[in-house]
Length: 130
Image: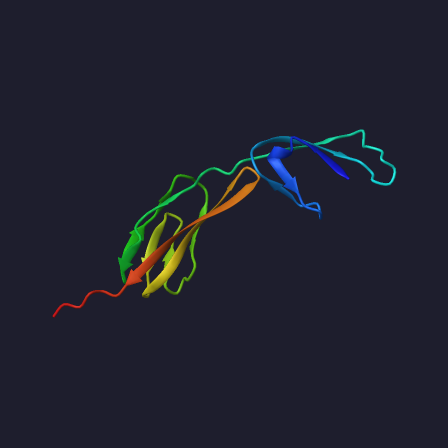
């Protein structure tokens, strides 16, 4: 069995998968369930928190136009759910290609943690003038 000191920072599944719940340091001590002997060595683990990252930008645009998105983070990567409808470059400039709904993604790494934030974006036809 595994003993974890400060269990408020993480959970451990039956298969041994560790999931961080809050930032902090935890210590693991292994105990053999057959002999009830505990390890002399403990294993410290730091649980890091993800930064709060938000995407700013419009929710709609017309086909053939660009839209600018920004985040309160640096060093991540932009992408869209459908590059046939819209593409986005590393500066956060989205280029509309076709009508429809796409999701704009910003993925990032902070320390040992990975995160992704998203925002829905709809592209409309240009209005016709008569």
